Amino acid sequence: MSYESFLSGFHSVMYVAMAISLAFALGVVVINVINLARLKDPKLKYDYISSREKRMYTYFFIGLGAALFFYMNTLFLEPVTESKGWIFIRMAVALCAGTLIGYIPSLLLKYMLPANQKGRLKKLRFQPRISPKSGKKMRLLTEQEEDVHLDEAMQAEENIFSVDYDVWVDDDSDYVKIEKYPGHLVAEECDRCGMQTLKLKKEEILKQPTEDEPGEIIKHYKCSYCNRVKHENKQIAQLAANKESFFLRYRDKIGEAVSEKQYHVQLIKMEVYDNDGHPHHYEFGDLDQARSFLKELDSKNKASEE
Image (cartoon, rainbow, N blue to C red; front, side):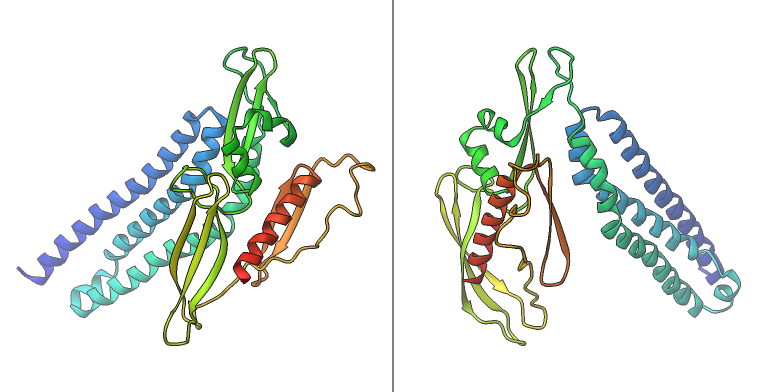
């Protein structure tokens, strides 16, 4: 086979691959739009946006980057025809361009998409639910009112802020809908009771990390619902890569300046910073919930320091 015949076949393959990549990227966009349109329930749409939308955008930009890579491998015909070495130069340039198309949007997705999603998710979460029994709008219960509808395991999850439950009630038909959302703090799922109440209680360093070797740590967990105790050994990154963070700074007391007796508190917004200076934002419906969160956060910090 001559070099010219090889180039002709190679370019044909590149055009077909480019078309497939563009079709894939377009198909991802269409599927995403269809999924959002067909999900009428606000909770289902909330779950889709929070868990799958970023992945769909990632697939779209991967397809776009691949299409650019294949397209650029059909350009610069004259130098490529004259010198076989140019085909590798062209391929390297195309790879850089395709990677760039995938990398820059990934940064936008990382820093801009969460801000965009936050408002949409908040709107979906508090959008009035419609009762399937009466067809009327349901009422969202407060933190104090909802406990009567939550079982002991659910309340245990809420008490350690690993899960947040919203309870909607139809006053006309007594229909109750309970929705589950991520909490402010992380807790693992207990392998005994299945609830998200397995908390880190204590950490012990068995081997200190060095610049050449990783260290070892043993983590002690306890389930706040079924009292299951679990121990887990993990590696500590080498000192050069080790970056401990999330030592949060906050006031010991909250609500001294604003008393519930003086004002009707509707919302408390809290901003805390980790060691890297990154802010973390939290919202609470009342002072008691905010105080409980700080108490839980304090116990988590003490466990990691021991």
